View 1 (cartoon, helix red, strand yellow):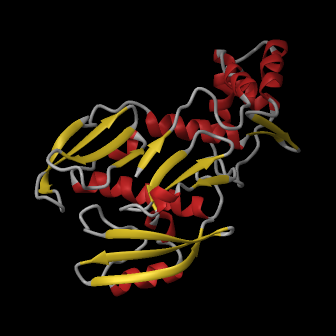
View 2 (cartoon, helix red, strand yellow; view 1 turned 90 degrees about the vertical axis):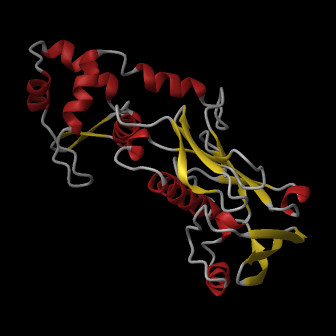
View 3 (cartoon, helix red, strand yellow; view 1 turned 180 degrees about the vertical axis):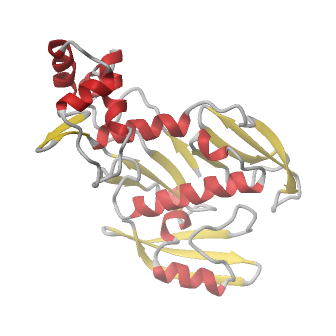
Amino acid sequence: MTDWVGRDEGPGGDRASVREAFSLLAHDIRLDIVLALLENWAAVYTEPQSYSDLMDAVGMRDSGKFNYHLDKLRGVYVEQVEDGYVPTASAVALYRTVLAHRPTETTTEAGELDEPCPHCGGTLVEQYERSFFTLDCTDCDSWELLNYVFPRNGLRDRTGRERYRAVESRADYHTGLARTGQCPFCAGPVTFHFDPEDVEGTPPLVGMTCDICTWHVGVTLLTPLRFVPRVAAALLDLGIEPPVIEADTVVEMTGEIRSEEPFRVALDVTSGAGTVTVASLTLP
């Protein structure tokens, strides 16, 4: 799996509104307001803070100045309800992202794993750079590359196998959700990209791109389809327990396009236990 994020302009092309949303927080008072509202966050059960309580929490005495900055945040990061003010989903999402990717002192940037490559017996190497976790073999190029954006916070207190299994699980569930047409990050619509040579290659590949944000992955065809009940049942027949197929499980795949409109494909999956074929699969 390969994940590409961070293009100059997202597919939605709404750079001006994104710039404006970030610029709203370019003041300490506004940051203090948002953080004060997030302090007692309890999802839908969050108790609104009154104007006076929020002003006290921020430590402001100048009501005119406080109201000016509060007004700038309304609608984007702050919502006014009947009993006061609550943070918006945008404020919560930004806060969670900051916590997930904040620097930690315990993160190992790269290293060799104790277990061998399942394909050639060579050395497995993990690397964490620019918030992307990569697992690769130094001795062969036949193994599918694991490369996915992963919060630095998730690597803390995990070592070796635990680290890449955590990344695998996250990536697999993200692509499983994307198979239904929903971006796992922004809930926007997902477009699938098919190249006949890739789909019928070994392994068969497919691309998925969010139409709104910058989420974009290239995966094997089995990755999003393993959540389909017929595919899951076929994998169980091979002794493979979906939905997460561990990186050290040797699985070979071939695909065959049966129809382009609508797009239908047959998938052959082979392991040490034999081969199964699942036909008439659609994406999404």
